[in-house]
Length: 407
Length: 115
Ligand code: FES
Ligand SMILES: [Fe+2]
Image 1 (cartoon, rainbow over the protein chains, first blue to last red):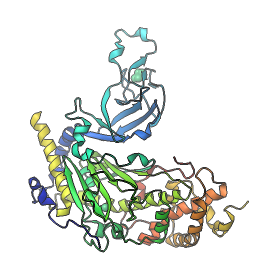
Image 2: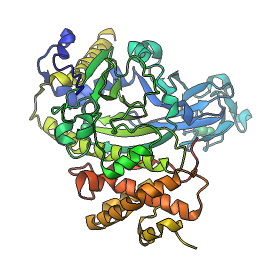
Image 3: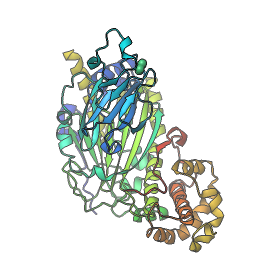
């Protein structure tokens, strides 16, 4: 028996958030959505991937930011610097690179053949003499602010970011430094579109009050278990606009037959196994209370990235809104490499169990959104262990109001 | 030529249906299968899976011969079907978001060595 549940009053640690209901208009209103785009998605640092995706000079990625219908080129230069540019040719606006990834020395626009170096500089113009006023130094690819934290590539779409990435991540980032993110080299990704507000989707991965009910067939026994019948969290920490929820693991969980074999042959403890890898030293910000019944932390990098981190693997959810009630949902898994052929089986179990468990979340989100759109749920009341959701609400309001007040 | 390593020839009857190209086709196959077929495959595989995994744990991805790779792919289908039997007792996730609306878009290879 080791249920170190901080049973009550997480919320009272943050008196500025109050304990009352919150109005739900920000979860469906088209006008508010437009304000969020300007105040949040055009201001905050947004994650685009990991450095391992472009290890060599000349490696590039083309990332589609569907929220803004924007195509972004991320490229590793000859100097090993990673840069981001709008994937937009400065002749007449065609996209310069059409493949989702690759390696090259120069980007050649497939319209009239203008060429750009890996540093974005205009490097070649066919029949240049026939232009009247070609100032090459002004016709490079348009740069986008880019910085890297622990191997994650972040961009910022504002002309001049209010804060550096380091400042933006602040204590939240500092407290997660040192986790072996780089070991998650075996990656997979799922993507879909869900008819719900982006904030509702973020929130659905930040509370475990629903685990014993919605996930009763799948992960209830591992993430809640007999000592934790209501799916309480171990802890919630709020750091600036970011937040981390520490989730219980049932250490006496007895796996099902196939699952048990998979756990035995996984390259690192599966997030649903109730096992932890003792050799991994967790940074301060993971399992911050050092509970001995911990399985994972669900940690939100405001606004749209959630990392779900266990000792032996991690995965991320990223949400790219398409409108007030529609969102692109990307889920990426980062598993350790298989050191023999049998471990490929353990990996497959990890991705299949993860996918099935999150498929259990999707329909509730679309039903909630219908209720919101119809005005049938005017306020949300939050459980003490839904503190992360309350914090999310207040953070969004704060960002929108602050941005509009200085404009 | 045997289609599977000798010790696992009992599983030969599943090769045509359950040796599949990748994670995506395994997921699709589960969606369209009858639960009775899933359960039959699951039971037969589970009986030999401990031995099969022990056998494959001495091999490296990228070094498997064709028979060994088929055996691995049968195990990967077993992984896909695990939750169908152990969580849901049906092919699909109960009240699940449609799997076709959340497809896998980047997969782990079944046979390329990992670093
Ligand atoms: S638009 Fe790119 S070369 Fe003309
Ligand atoms: Fe959930």
